[in-house]
Image (cartoon, rainbow, N blue to C red; front, side, top):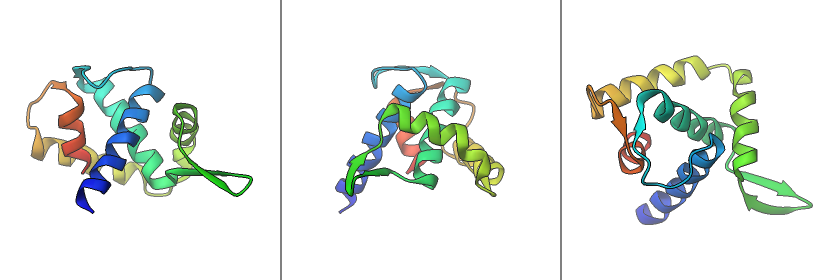
Length: 109
């Protein structure tokens, strides 16, 4: 089950990269871009990871993730969640200035 959860989380993280305009998991991002991706991931995770259309479920697209991230301000604890993400990053990757897919995956899971 752990591998399935990790696999699904990595798919959502990859879509989150695309949602902020970054393509390819090998990207080595600066801190600001990395947090844009991780915040897109968290917005998607909090607000929903599936879309239902005519009773059919499908995974989120990059456009869906962009919309969720744009609307995350309606989530009452969003600022707290962003602070938790910052704290987790400092704990797991202190003083890191560059972030790759694997590091962001580790921080988010």
